Length: 148
Image 1 (cartoon, one colour):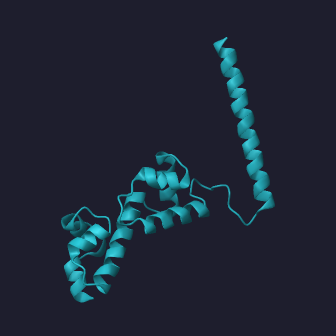
Image 2 (cartoon, rainbow, N blue to C red):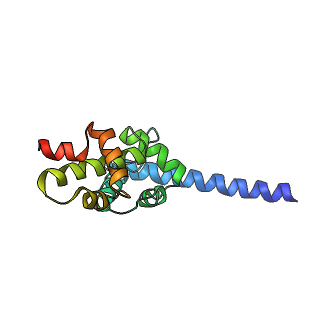
Image 3 (tube, rainbow, N blue to C red):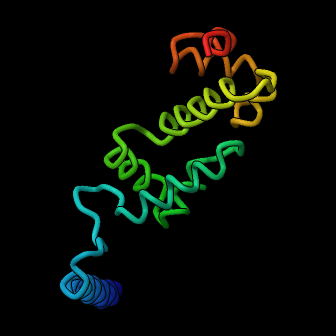
């Protein structure tokens, strides 16, 4: 009896999968300029744009993997793999680099203190910011500011 119930569930799941695949294929044929189906495990162009925009708008916030995955409506696991396939680096590294690049602009264009820039860019404090900045740029925030 259990085996029969599992067989019926499997058949229903299979039928639903085939139906969804057929619907996506028809959508692809009717709208060839839109990218509805992801290729090679990467994010679709819309997902990539959405996650990039989300990161830019929230650089000063604590952004977690769950937040980014939710933007793309994917699980953490699938999002991480697709993100790396799309951007060539893991989400944490991409976010880290974007925060440092934002800090570079702030250091060059303003006289805001290094500690305040660190907080504004989503770092926990000046020491974490200093290490991150040095890793990406190759010099301390103050050295960078003096040269710009």
